Length: 54
Image (cartoon, rainbow, N blue to C red; front, side):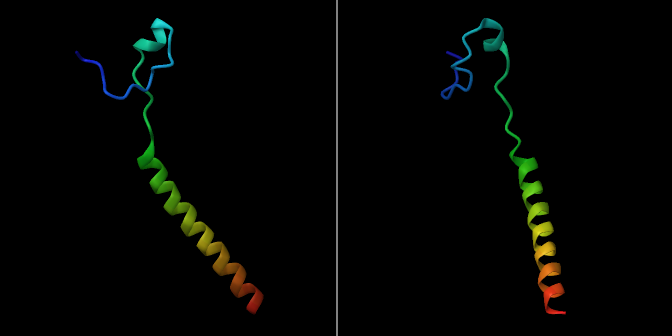
């Protein structure tokens, strides 16, 4: 039997939708975006904090 253990398209009842490949998760892209967002937030906080001191 060539059926997968975990089915991602179980709810897709239409034959055309059943024939499509399962959706691809973009976890590698999100990791890079999270680091960029963290660095941007850190720089913004750093700039605001030191502008209030001086």
